[in-house]
Length: 286
View 1 (cartoon, rainbow, N blue to C red):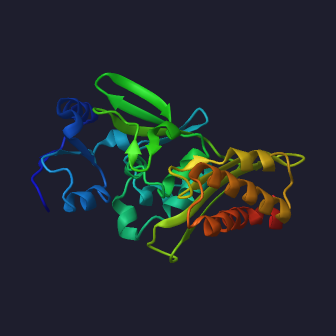
View 2 (tube, helix red, strand yellow; view 1 turned 90 degrees about the vertical axis):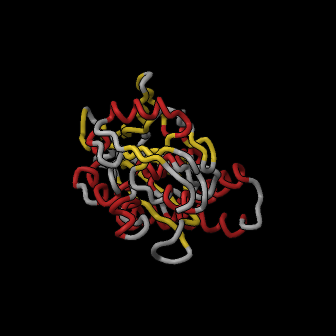
View 3 (tube, rainbow, N blue to C red; view 1 turned 30 degrees about the vertical axis):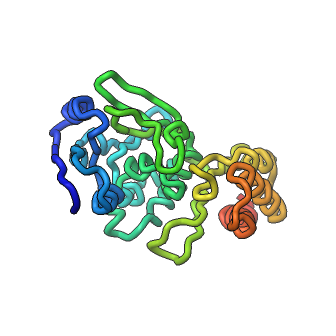
């Protein structure tokens, strides 16, 4: 490993926040480290301080409280995908967690790390966005609660300030909703998503009473695709409706990103991904 680094392992969250405040922009929180270790081997962050937060119990929170899921940023994807509570209340997120990397990666990679890296193809983010996730940020100065979308400033650029730690996510429960996560990659496993999509729906008496769709990899940061949601809201969708919703989604994607050499492919792929994700609604009449 290139360069030299100071290593710190605080015993509790307060100690970690004190270190983060003292070290300022030179502090690098270390949880799973699956992205950070790669960047360090590439020669980045020489002279920085590693603050090991992987053993802090405060970051392992997982509970249902007043209709909301409280989800610690230090939970691994193995812990998320194996949670019966989350299967009931966060189905799209659980499906995404089970598809991230290899078993070895899922055993160490954390939800918070996947989010703060701000990769456009972060698999967990669409599943959080469809549940209106809020991020809890702690510092010595206090606690800040912001919508997850506000953290996603740009590709690999987060809105987390120096001295802050992402400690928890709060999600609206999706109990009783139908959820799905699909992604398109160069191969079926251990591949970065070219496109990803999370969907949550609720069936009303006359059609879909709630529709939430979030796209990953197709825009600079993952985002809710509100136009496609509004198109499907209130419909008992048929397959042709899904294709039209996919067209609406793809059109918005291109509006955000502009025309690129891959646009012709990605337009059709995004449309097809939405149809693939939601087709069980048509086939089973949910």
